[in-house]
Each structure stands twice: as C-alpha cells, then as structure tokens.
Length: 275
Image 1 (spheres, one colour):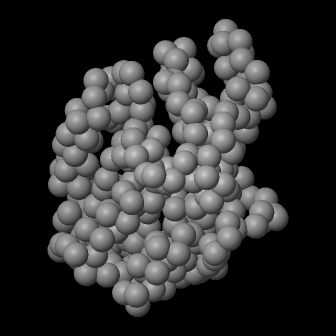
Image 2 (tube, rainbow, N blue to C red):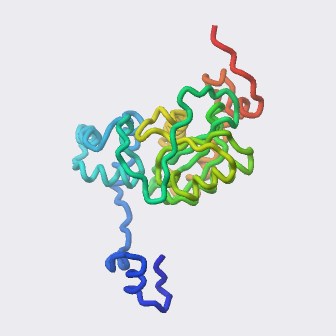
Image 3 (cartoon, rainbow, N blue to C red):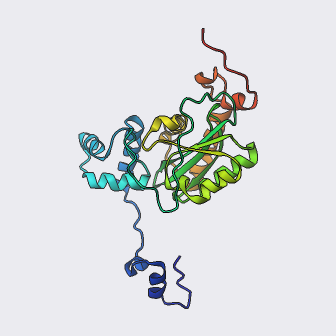
C-alpha cells in the first residue's frame, strides 16, 4: 500500500491509509530456528490433540522439556493459522463486509462426485521456514481437485486453487469452508455465488464439519511432510505435488471400497453396502 517512490510524503501516505508512522519503518524479523522447531512440534500435537488450546499445548511442551509461556504459544499458533477445535458458541463478529453462511451439510446424503467440494489451509514446516498449503477436495470421493502453496495466508492462492478446480472439473452444487477470513471475504464468496454454487460454512471451531479435509491433512503430514525436510519453497511444492498425485491415483481408501480417489471420481459407482 505504501509507495516509497511516490511524490506524496510517507507520513502523508500513512495518514491517508490510517497507518501508524512506526509501521513504515518496521521490518519483519525471520523466525528463529528454536521457534521453527517448536512450531513443528505444535503442528504434530495439534494433529493428535486438535482440542488442545494454548494452555494445554504449553503444558504438553513443558512436559517434553520445552520451557515456554502461554503467550509465546499463542503467538506461534497465530503465525501458523491454527486454533483449538471444539464446539463453542459463536460469539465472534465477522470482519467488516464478511458474511457468515449457514452449514448446509448436516443430515445431507452426499453420494456423488461434484455434489460437495470443500477447502482448507494447513501449515507446512520446512527445514528452515514454512509455507501454507490450500487444497480443494471433492467431499464424496476425497479427490484433491486442485492445490496451491504460498509463503503467506493471503487470499490470492485460495482463489487460484478454486478457479483451477472450476476450470478443470466444472462446479459443485455446494462448496464448504471454515469461517477463516480468506473464505468469508467478498472476493471468495462472490466467486462461488457468481458460479451459482451454494455456500456452506462450518460451525465455529467444529472440526467434524470439514472432517474429510482434516483427514487429508493428517495423511499429507504423516505420509509426506514429517518424513522430509524441504530446503526450499520449490522443493516443497514439487514434493507435495508428487505426494498428492500418489494420493489421488495410487493410494486406495477403505472408505471408497479400496478404490483410489481418481477411480471413485472418474468411474463413479455407488459403494456396495456392508453386509
């Protein structure tokens, strides 16, 4: 937003944008190696204990010999984009202009491809740093329809993933997300509405509402990410791409009758009922 080459003085630009003058000279500090190690462990603990908030995570880390305070845990959780997952009253207010949509999947029988799509963002640790991964998933077949890697959690890479999925696979009847600021933004919801797609959003803090994407993240983390230490964003992107191709094309799912997501998506047949 600030243009240092513009003829308008920086102080005046800050006034117009309602920014503090001190923010003009702030330079973000890189995350320390110690914090990166703690973030990696928080990510693992969050997968195993998604209900754990900052207090419990602090105590779990201290039990492993990591001396850390609760406020530091909160700071790292915010940087990672994670929070404790449990059902609680939705007392928060959406950001200005961000509308929260109702959850449409409760009691709905999802029995065909492209009936419901879902998306989410997850934190991906690297050897020295981290990135974020967003994926669009077909709810019925678990197939990853598109994905993107980004060094920030800005909106653009989420939009790109959805636009690619729409271009390649048509459109779903319903698109489900959580209540993250990226997915409640006007740009994101307008993209879905303009394509005639019904918008569904998880209840605040309810992991079960988007359970199939959460299961995807668990597979990605334990079968790919935690076995490697990516040296660069490019390496992370390439390795994740190979894994997601394996996940779609070669990894059988018991919930799909031992078929792969590709087989279930492109050769749709009703699943046989268990005897």
